[in-house]
Structure formats: structure tokens, C-alpha cells
Amino acid sequence: MLLTPTGGAGNGTAGSAGRLMSIGTVLNQLRDEFPEVTISKIRFLEAEGLVEPRRTPSGYRKFTAQDVERLARILRLQRDHYLPLKVIREHLDALARGEQARIPSPSPQGDATPVPDGPADPERPTVARVGRSELLAAAEVDAAQLAEWEEYGLIAETEGGGYDAEAVTVARLLCDLGRFGLEPRHLRAMKAAADREAGLVEQVVAPLRRHRNPQTRAHAEATLKELAGLSVRLHEALVQTALGVRIR
Image 1 (cartoon, rainbow, N blue to C red):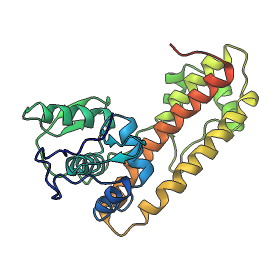
Image 2 (cartoon, rainbow, N blue to C red; image 1 turned 180 degrees about the vertical axis):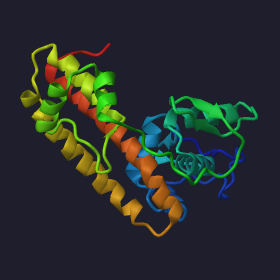
Image 3 (cartoon, rainbow, N blue to C red; image 1 turned 60 degrees about the vertical axis):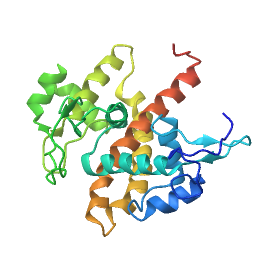
């Protein structure tokens, strides 16, 4: 699409409402409130369809003041309410239609449940844990199988004892892979790759956790989850590509 001189304000003036900005200018405007934002983050939000900057004939992005306001709203919803991008998009679309949309909040099942506008709950939910017997029952395996998985480092107890909720998912997947003849010794490479990916994500999030701003530190958890999701999607795509499987 060719770039036109009219901005989001619709009056074509040279004021701030009608001025078109480069991505670097947008980054500088956002960083006062969101010091962790990067150009890659803005490009990612564009790729996810949350913001649609204009393009010059040579392909450069140009943002309006309304685009910057929308980006700031998106970043606040992520930081203050820990909302996934799909829910944020639906919320903003509802506002664009003129609906009286309340700020949604993810339910434990991951669905968006409307709640009144207000500050985010500062208390984080306690991480769910299961005991050894509960894990065995949920995964429908015996103690010998669990011991073998632990021996190869595929499953491990937490420091406080017990297993986190994801251990149940891991155990079930190990069972499913086992039906195809894949034994724990075959899966150590997957665990090593996962550990490397986790280390990379932690490295990105570490500066946010050390930040003096409490809201920025709280945002680290949401960023961690988002990066983990992207990492999983990339891993899946790379495996599918390596196998030559076409996803329909």
C-alpha cells in the first residue's frame, strides 16, 4: 500500500496528530513508560496483526500517533493484566466497534472472563504441585517408569518437594512416545535442547527481573510466558520443516 499524507487524525495537518513517525521514533516515545520494549517487539506485534503501520513505496514503516497510542495500550494490557495477544486483539477490536468492553482477565482454563476495569491483582497464583502418587495416577504409569524418567533427567521433583503441574503433561507425552519405541535414553537430546531454550529465554527476561520499576519486574512473568510460547512454536515448525511435513 502506498503511503498517503493523511494521518490517523484525519485532518492532514503537520501537528503531532498527523505526523508520520519511523519505528525508531515510536520506540523512543514508548521507552519512557516501557523501557523493555524493542524494535523486534514492535515488529512482532505488527506480525500478529495488533498494529498496522503504513508503508512507504520503499517498504519503510510509518506510524501515526494513533498507532503509538494503540501500542501503548497493548503493552499496558500485557504488563498490568498479563493478557495473551489474542485476548488483547479481541478487546481492542471491540473498542474499535464502539462497544463498552471491559478489560478481560484470563481464567484458569485460558479463556477470557470479563472483569471490571481496575489495577491488576498484585498477588500471583501459587504454582500447582502434585505428589508422587498423584503423578503416577494421572499419567497412568508405575513407579519403575517414573524412576527411569527421573534417572535420565526427563522429570524431576521441585526443590520444595513434589512435581509441578507440567510434569503430568511431560509424563503423558513420554508414555505416548514410548508406544512408538522411543525410550528415555533416546529423549535426552530433547531435554537438553529444551534446557538450552529455557536458558536463552531466562537470559532475555533477566534484565526485566532486575529492573527497579516493580511493574517492569511483574511484567517479566508475562514476557517469560510469551517467549516460551514462541519458542515452542518455533521448535515445532523447525521439526516439521526438517521432516518435510507440510502443515495444512
